[in-house]
Image 1 (tube, one colour):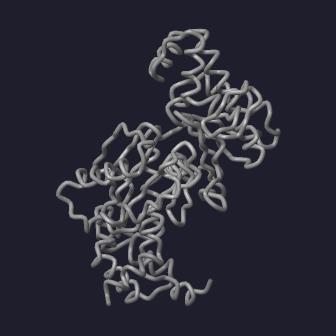
Image 2 (spheres, rainbow, N blue to C red):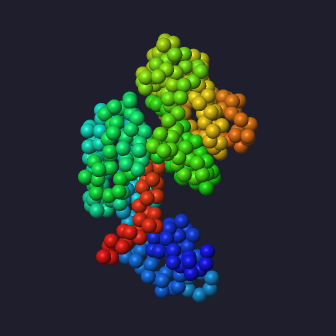
Image 3 (cartoon, one colour):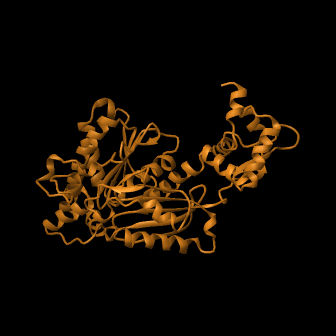
Length: 394
């Protein structure tokens, strides 16, 4: 690309991108990278400073003479509202523009109570967490919901186990209270985004995240981007049948789905059937730590069944790493061992040559991080920033 072409493309939004990524952190850097003249660089930087997107920070390293002033993206220039909804637990937060939580609340919400109950509670919690901050300070909203989501529309679909959410278009409901861009995706997709970008930053471009909790789902990162599929249904591995299912009826209406065989709900059911008095995964954890043989067998068998499905996914997708997250995967090493055992045995030699199977690096916070990153990717994209600046100058 010629310097002239580069200069034509280097809008204020592109200059902001260069500052955010650290590719150019001084006016001199910007001129060198973009080919813009000194007055053109100054004009764009002044515009970004005026609109609170960039601040002048500590002085940069000197190469002789007066040190240059360093340009830094203003993380405090607004906030993002995020909510990672789970089947039984929801994490709600207000984040700065770097994605770091400023205020957070973890709530026990039964999402099957429906959007008419759950969404007002989420909206009210955001208002409480904002405190004295004005609504005008909010730049965007990101939500992850435990359902297949048609991303472009923000519509929940394919929710046979959450019928009241089916067909609900979420963004307009949220925007009525917070009139900003609203982005909604499947809960596991946003966790996968968080793990990839924050947990494995710069390490891998192809990652499979599998959430094993009350239910089972997956998020696919391919070539550095989330893979949603044609209608948002990519990653729905929970309803793939397994050989070791034993005819168990799944909530979706089919039998032997891995969700009904290897999820936290399934593990609790199987242990009760074997006479163990367990009411929660905390009870299962205690039995695992005590070395209870029956419990260890149930958990490892669940891992083997899950490994059966993951092995097929590894053969199809060839990820560099499989990340296991969610309450069950993070608590039970026997389950992780069962997954590894089957995946390395049943996947192709090439697909597993350098494959790593690891537990989540971010843990429960991955959903909040992923929701924030999803919003930031859109509201801070160069073309969106340019459009916003243009509106403010009319």
